[in-house]
Image (cartoon, rainbow, N blue to C red):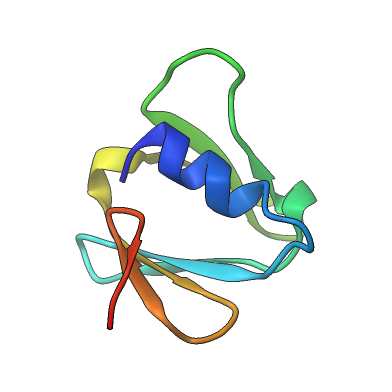
Length: 81
């Protein structure tokens, strides 16, 4: 997953909730755009709020796929057919 691919998904309007599936089998759901912070400068790391007073910094190289609100998985930013 690249930073640009995540920015495109995160910045889509209207926003659609999505789930990031990590290489270690965990998943992180982003139900609202304010639950994810993507740095303005080039970076491999993003900040995800996963619950009240709980957050994680995620290395984008460890994101295996993203499932966008319509249930279609996206690997490396491309929709699976």
